[in-house]
Image (cartoon, rainbow, N blue to C red; front, side, top):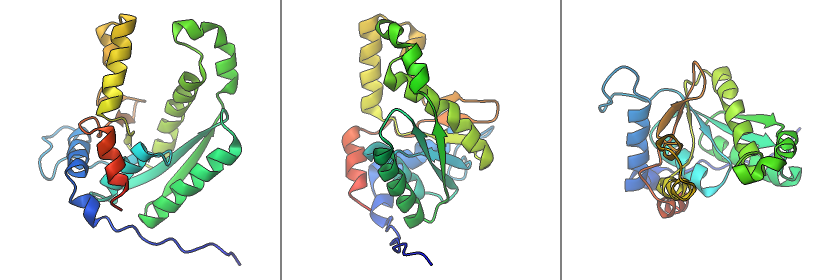
Length: 213
């Protein structure tokens, strides 16, 4: 017998009425439209939503859940942060997924060793902790998506992330390829596509969405 506390369902009415949430839903449908025009009935492919329990990914999840239930919520846990912290985030993600009546999945990845090996390349932009964790997450996402029949993985990058990335690449004298590193859609694997439905909204929009549900 368990003592699990009941999780109250989330009321998405206010989220559904929000302009930023509508923009996210519109771009999600456009980005998941395969081989046809993304009109009112276009797009909407089953999507794995990468959720860290932070404000940006929570806003993404709320906006998409207000639009569809064809979602799976994923938390990718790496070994470069204290287990106690990631346990808290994982519990928050699972609670939110349950409140939204959505399935959830967790994947554990190892990236500390990779970061340590690349420590000497820090000045060239490789091997630092953040980059190693990001690579490990992106490596794990296609497997989780495939296991749950999700041809799309959605992540919570927004317009402010895009601007900050562009400024960073300009400072470094990046090529045009580098400036496109946060493009709305890219291939993760043969069967899985990464999408960024939040690039038309700001960080403040995302924070506001989190207060509506």
